Length: 160
Image (cartoon, rainbow, N blue to C red; front, side):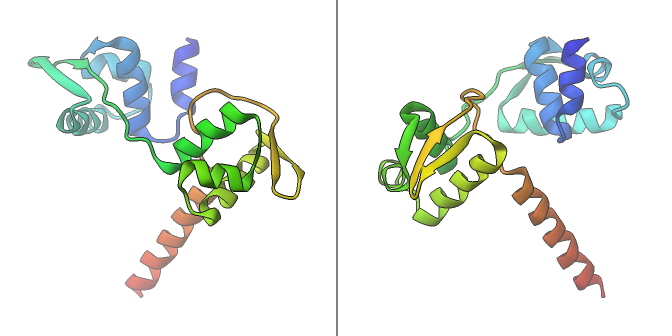
């Protein structure tokens, strides 16, 4: 029951399907539908087919799939997060130098992590890790929502 609640909290349908498939390992689309009540079976089938194309899942026999997973390419934010976790006390310049990311990227992400409550600014340019949620890179959800609003606004303006 706890897994169902955890899956329900994930905002993207594909990510929910991926999480259920990873848990089940071998499954049918009906098995995933049982873990994701209220989700249309057609949308689950589309997500599974997309993941088959990327190699995350493979067909065992008609209607039966296996979750294989795939290595996710590390982004600059993944590298920055890894450095933040490993250093605990660090400067903006140090993270920029070690990650190879642009200063603006590092600064923006550090401020995002501060807003999320994972780090705090000790003094100008110096940071400290306060809470470590684990190796998964935290995402700037506020920025994602802002981009969605901007895209929706642009689409409305195109229609007019």
